[in-house]
Image (cartoon, rainbow over all chains, first blue to last red; front, top):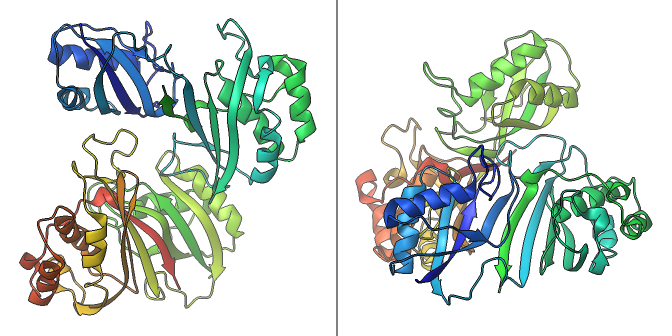
Length: 245
Length: 245
């Protein structure tokens, strides 16, 4: 039974998230329906990152098994035909060993968070960035972000519903840069807690607004209490960019 | 009667184009309706570039006159409130002298054309780029493009419906660059003929595919016949980026 690895791009806007749910369209159910349409099989798909409702992917990685052998490019082309008009695109496919697991084998996840920090709302990027109506200090955000890089107890930045066994994670990269009317946050780690990137961004935004200092961010991390950190940034600014193995 | 200059961003996808038409929503009618809602006036608006259906703007410039004096920022904020949920955003406004004319005073128009040249269709950039399913040679396109820069009779790249008096135009910039899975074409001139950028891009795409050489492009220009050049690239890749005065 060959196993396939698939790289996906999607617009998270119309979906309830990656994971199949009782109500609403999920990326998973959309993908599995498209797979079923041309394979005649009903494979279950496993993703590297279970993105939340509204969160986008530029390079989500998924694996699934098929009874029959398929040419990888044929899988991509057939998927892209059957996925229409859903905003999900199969970028690449390859056959992988049976022990490859999209989630468990992943050693690095890279996210991008886009903040549009201008007064006017986005016309072209509506639903593709977090609109903050005033300028943020990206340099101050970057400096404060460095206090969060490394191995820490990230309880303060973890959704209360997070099911991870441990709040200990190693954040390898948290970079904040200005790009025109945007502040872009790059975050990279082996794995993240639920809502961790959005909670980090929501907290750094307080620094960008001048309400918090780097010391406040350090204190929030040390408090190990969700209430000690800033709010959760909205999903529409978040992109799963790449998964490393 | 004060005159105002407005900078607009819009997603051209849902519109029949800038110009008001008997059927379908135009950017102009959408903007004028929003202006009327808070001013109680019915100003006519004039744009620097009458973008076609599906063509986007990052920096369209518009002027209009109001009987009453308004603070420019108030115009932007009220417009952005009343434009919702249309994908049109007022970026900036200022009061200008009565002889300022968005179209006639413009001395430079800059456009960007985005081509996504990968096999997989766009999920996030659907309607925001021209999807060409195979790799283009951006360097060859750039080289051929240089044969089109300068003062020429652009009849071969002009829509047959074009109403400009003369086909003579000076193309100041035509630059082709690769950016990841995209080929980006920047075009800049005092003014353009109808469909000129899209016809230039459609012709350069033939070069990118290896079907045409730079010499073929030179011959197409010299032929001064629309049929001698390549097809018209679709509108969704085109962005009016900036207007200079």
